[in-house]
Image (cartoon, rainbow, N blue to C red; front, side, top):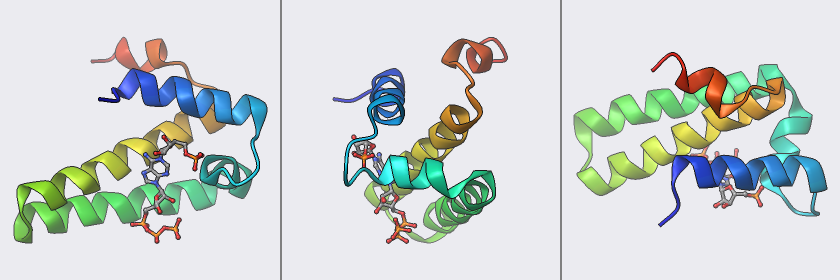
Length: 87
Ligand SMILES: N=c1c2ncn([C@@H]3O[C@H](COP(=O)(O)OP(=O)(O)OP(=O)(O)O)[C@@H](O)[C@H]3O)c2ncn1[C@@H]1O[C@H](COP(=O)(O)O)[C@@H](O)[C@H]1O
C-alpha cells in the first residue's frame, strides 16, 4: 500500500523526469493558481463526502486532497521535512 512519503517520492520523480502522459507534470505546468483551485475543489469534496457519503467515498476524496497538497508542495519546492516539522 502506498504511503504519503512514497507518493511524494513518486511525484518528485515525475517532476524531474517529466514522463509523457503524467497528470502531475500537467498539473505542475498549470501553475500555482490552477493547483490551488484543484486543492480547494478537493477540500470541498472531502467536506461533502464527510457529510453525505460512505467511508470508501470519503477515503477516496481525502486521497485526492493529499495528492493535490503534494502537487503544491512540489511546485513550490517544499520538502516533506519542512512540513513535518510543523506537525
Ligand atoms: N494519487 C493521485 C491522484 N489523486 C488525484 N489525482 C488527479 O485528480 C483527478 C481527480 O480529481 P477530480 O475529482 O477533480 O476529477 P476530474 O475533475 O475528472 O479531474 P481532472 O479531469 O481535472 O484531472 C484524477 O483524475 C487525477 O487526475 C491523481 N493523479 C495521480 N495520482 C497518483 O500520482 C502518481 C503519478 O500520477 P501521474 O503523474 O498521472 O503519472 C500515480 O501514482 C497516481 O496514482
